Length: 408
Ligand code: ASP
Ligand code: MG
Image 1 (cartoon, rainbow, N blue to C red):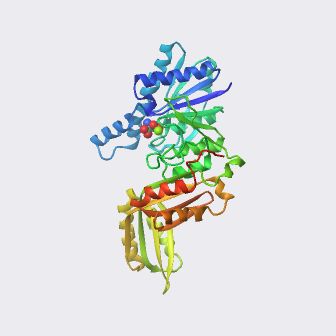
Image 2: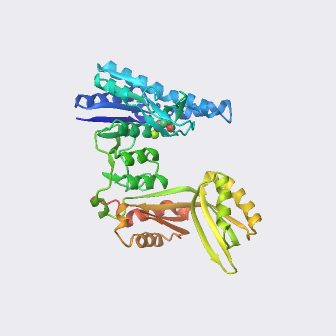
Image 3: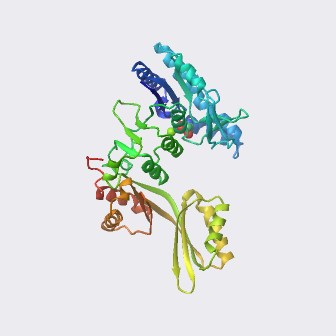
């Protein structure tokens, strides 16, 4: 039997009891004949508490020191998990990111993994130990501690699984798997048995907070099967895997909503070469990430250009848009900070027709006005009023029969 990587999130190591349960799970896999590497997050809300502490000291904590601080959360949990395994009578060793040779660039608080030297892990595995690795952290070539961005333990786990050529990566969490939609909004949402890397990446970018996106990118690149499942039960969860041809049998795998959006419209901008370039250059320079862009031509060689941004960037975007309006001689700016985006995702869209029509029909029946539509090969998104978004999601979910049992 091969090597497995098991990752336990914050709630799955929240207290002594949960830590012991995680230890038992790792031991079970070992007794079943696997080599086992465990990756853990910080206990419960530890990371949030540390962030909070830092901001009590200063509004502007130096990023290097932030990493020094936040990485301690995971160091607590690896030591405790290793102790729990020893207590049950098995051999385990805890290791920090630096100790396992997980090298990153020096972009503190959002570092990217550059290289993993797996020798030390292999040495301990060969000696029969369960290796417990601190998630979320790495080290630069100079030896400075870095972190991979909030939620980054998923990425540690999948990257390690890739580097160690693990048979699979198991993500133990507080949900049973990945659902057709957020069950808090759509009570009829159903757990998926399988989902492809591309589908989950698309869902994640559309606001479904399932896993750290970078972890899925690693999984996809190195073809690591990822099993997302509950740490409270033995029930299988959802496999994130490579696409198989039968996955195209159904058009839509899941639906999601992002309620944190705002739209800005630059009205009546001169419709000539270079104007769009100027607008989005200014927006980018303000570090505002643009979601959708819509351009509508008007008479007299003018156009309306709208774009949506995250609500958290709205104030910056507004200031930039007002300046641009002056600069390029537009006819004014209008804002709407009450928008949301509902989306459906599925690799089956590549081969099915009528998916968009069905989605628009469902929205029409729900009397929801569509303010904008955007598509990719495997998704269709509509901007709608935020107060209609949940209802829109439920209608769409039903229209595509996502609550029905049989699944490709
Ligand atoms: N402890 C870190 C966080 O809360 C990393 C993780 O849990 O994945 O963001
Ligand atoms: Mg997490």
